[in-house]
Length: 118
Image 1: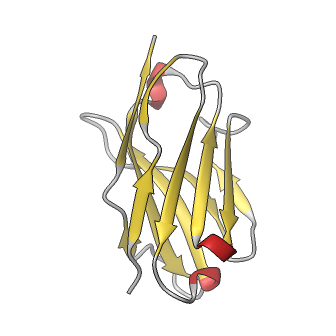
Image 2: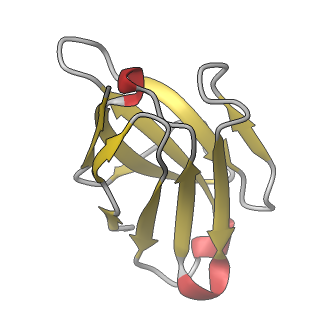
């Protein structure tokens, strides 16, 4: 069982930055792929970024070049650095985890609100 706790959301002006954190429980964190997803009001949840157990990353086109996903296995924590934020980035951001041998994300955090004002 993996428990995920996100933090770092808030209100920021367009063009600003935020760093989201996701702390994971468990002793095998380094074996897990991690992901960030977001859901805006009235919209479906969408993929933002992922990082594999060995550090490979990928990003949605909408955030590529602005967001950076990293992990610190010693702290059981992943980070999403979000720069050049836009009003359309406003959403609840969710951290997710899956073991590296599985295909789907099995564990989800409670979400953290990010609001970007214009």
